[in-house]
Length: 186
Image (cartoon, rainbow, N blue to C red; front, side, top):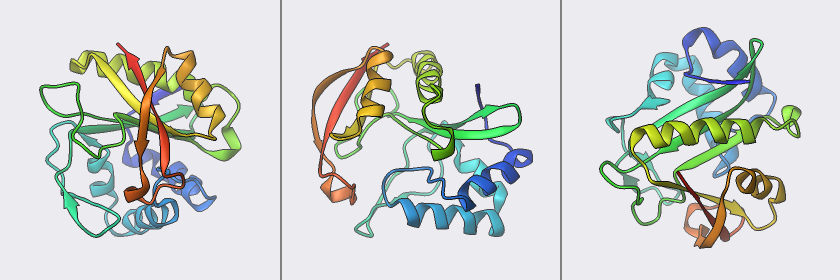
């Protein structure tokens, strides 16, 4: 499995995963999935561009309450193996600091398509994205997990993560209001 920069040529595999129920985020799952399917029809180039925005110049991010926040620099990589879409992982950061702005739930988010889970893909992807975070100049990355998401917690622990607190994600319409805040030193 390798992490790849999404391209237009890979979109049929990604569309298939979305149509089968893959959700690229764990916040507003169905809404985001539908939005991406619609954008694939309307403007696939723009969707690909949003997945690689290391300068944070894309449009503002709409919050669940309808407000908007400036977009942080960020990249998305797809987990890819033998021409097959496995999942996605993204990294976002604030320029010039390892700290994130208040209310941002973490540097890294990842999800593996349900039909590929249990094969170590998330661990391998997290190791690889941490290398990219180090190259960007981050000293650490933070991630959040629901308290009952044992699989994701084990993944983070395998990469050296430790719990450093909690994060109240209730304002993000997250499935679990109080989530664990993890840190991986780079």
